[in-house]
Amino acid sequence: MRIAVNTRLLLHNKLDGIGWFTYHTLKSITSSHPEVEFIFFFDRPWSSEFIFNSNVKPVELFPPARHPFLYYLWFEYAVPKALKKHKADLFLSPDGYLSLATHVPQLAVIHDLNFEHYPGDLPFLTRKYYQHYFPRFAQKANRIATVSEFSKSDIIKCYGIDSDKIDVVYNGVNTLYQPIEFREKSEVKEKYTNGCPYFLFVGMLHQRKNISNLLKAYDQFRKSGDVKIKLLIVGHRKWWTSDMEGAFIQMQFKEDVIFIGRQPIQELVKIVGAALAMVYVSTFEGFGVPIIEAMRSGVPVITSNVTAMPEVSQDAATLIDPFDIDSICKAMIRIHADPNYCNQMITKGIERSKDFSWEKTSALLWESILKTTPFK
Image (cartoon, rainbow, N blue to C red):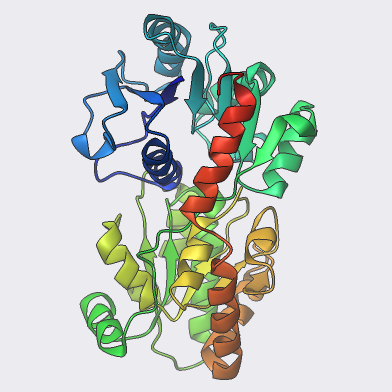
């Protein structure tokens, strides 16, 4: 079998959610199936770290696909030509984008449909591209994989896709995330927060991550008592908005909000492990990987009671209403004031995190591959 893969999100030192999904699943699948030839389609010069095994052949396709017009050229012209040239039996796309101009069987991993529910969170052209093409991609796909039962249900409702065509392939969690020792926690806090405990957010600073309400809730929490707890925010500010900026400017305790940008995985593992709690209060998620990363690290989690987050966290997190600032604040107060409750959440979180691994994800994705193509 010859499988072509859209690997344009495998970027050196720039892996985010879908990039990590692509990295971990392909690293496992290419190793587990040496009998299969994999052709990785990059849209720029590739890094050798992503050529996982000898059965991987990297190919650079022009043009770099980082804009809706270029998405169209890449997927509708470059990809079909390359699929034909390399005689691919299947096209696997971990970010859900497909080609409408090929007859090669295609498997799309559609992580969520946030753009259908919160279209205003995206730039105009990107939003229009997603809303025009993703319904067509879903219909064109021979099979769809997604990362939660919530997302599966959402794809069925929004696009009228038969449930039998969709496989749930839950995200995994990096095994580097582990509880860390007291000494290491102290070192991390000294480095980032002058020795103070901190609430933590990890993720791209996108509108749907609900940064504005997080900032307002933290400010309200600080006003509720004389506590020296900081808010540490880890993530790229590419999508920073005037709404977020306004919320930040109006804060009384803005000097205790610390932005440290994107961090390498080795450092991020320490930052997560030293946190008082992960506060991940998005308005929309297809999964929410930082929830499981924190749980695996022995860190309590505050997360939202909407979309996929209750499914992922079950009873192992403090669920809040992401649209209610007071709800988020009260959860922060409880985590700070009730150590017994904290310990219960830590224990439950560690147990819940055991349900997720990249080995399980990769095995389920391989099953989807075999359902997509008649070749065995």
